[in-house]
Image 1 (cartoon, rainbow, N blue to C red):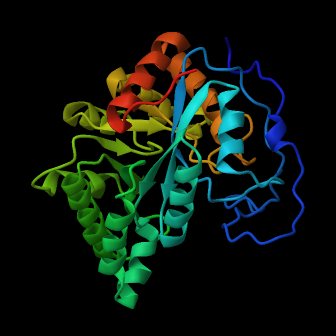
Image 2: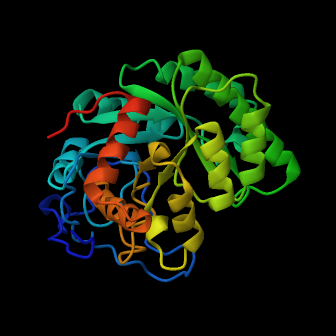
Image 3: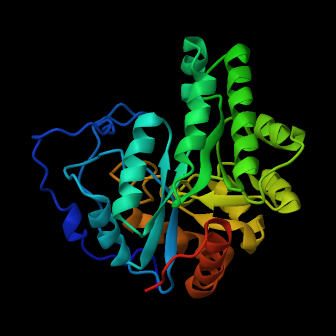
Length: 319
């Protein structure tokens, strides 16, 4: 079934938002960060349901976007209509960790990940509170539905300067050690820092059993390194972008047992809806693209990806 055949926007995401009441969640900018133009804030139509269960490997439900305010249960109810049976809700600071724990307590289809985002580590180090914040990550990770340490890693796009990069590397190593200590998978944020991310991983005495490159942005050469070490690549909507030939070639080169799929919602909305709000119900668009890119059926590749997801994070209940 082609990805271009889509249905209506899930009823939960139809415009209904009124800016009233108290809501501390961060809000995605209504202006596109690359073009500076005003974004279209209506949620896109849903894809055709996946023929096999799929899990959104990485999403940020604590971010609001568009004209809706949904509970975690409403989000997952909408996702389940297209056979998205679970999602990893990712916390990147103390506030989002508290949101995530509350979401996990009310919604059994969610699992959680927690870390200090690399872009936040520099300010915390300057304040003298970075080590304390990482210790808090350890505390948050004790929740039984917290199944991952992440997203952690290096970001040379938003944070510049060797001194600041060294702070990010220090925090990255601390998170790796924490994942090893707790026996949890590691989700990596890698933006314009491929070589140093890989070098950091290879410098460690021990790594977690499962290492995941979230929203994989490397090329086929980097994919060969992941193949060699058994590291996972989670593909977001960027693999659907028309000019991103490198990502599609990487997807072709990767061993299928190392593939995962995600939204990174509310960001990185798949083509042809790039720039509009994103949500877990959109993840089948990316699954369809991966199957087409690899010349596999959605049923075959989707089944493998679902098995991969459960190998990394534990069982999800299929419909």
